[in-house]
Length: 93
Image 1 (spheres, helix red, strand yellow):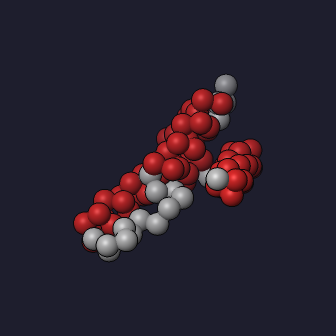
Image 2 (cartoon, helix red, strand yellow; image 1 turned 90 degrees about the vertical axis):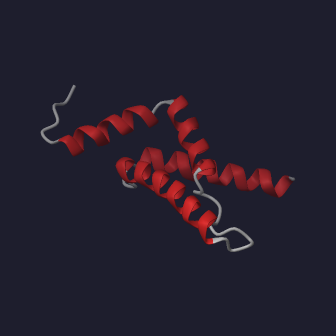
């Protein structure tokens, strides 16, 4: 097991281990939907309080994605495959 010299590297490694499993990827994709990763944060009525809450939820998801880093190609491919599958399902409904 590699030794990490700084806490940020260790934390990123822990995030990759957590979300790199099949179950972790499923949870990550659930969070993507639940934390406004795929829909606008501004409600139809434009309520600024709801928008602020939704933006906070999206920030939580973006924090996770930042720790995984977009250059982690395996995770990015899984994410893109998930998006493509959801689009196909939406088109078939």
